[in-house]
Length: 151
Image (cartoon, rainbow, N blue to C red; front, side):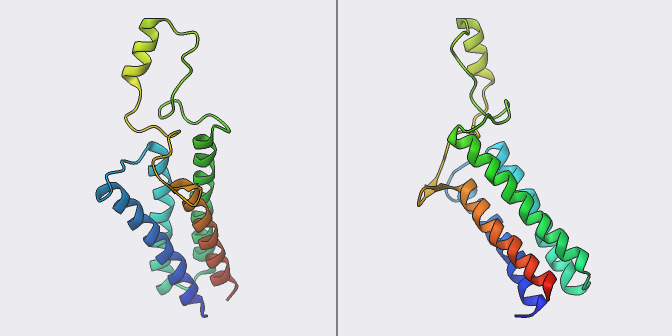
């Protein structure tokens, strides 16, 4: 395969993941949480880099594409950890402890809770959530960017 083929495959993979996320949101009715949205930004950057790299053969662009793919994989991995309870996520999209709250504080916590929580798994396949699949596939896309860089 040529550099252009790897670049198209990597940027096309980001496009496919982004379109899949929009399909889950708009066709499947699964509203994204804050961290789900964060995972989309590097894909947009990777798509733009891929389009530019087809016309401007600069190795630095390919390295940036790999970094974009690694960035979304990193956010996806962090999100998986939040979903699994391995660590706490941002307080603006995860549930807080209830233990020592009085009734008024608990009511305030419930009323300010986001509609879509980052620590809930809305969909999973083969034991991986959407964030997990994003992480795995984005790591493969990063390898495609590296292959493009090596050509």
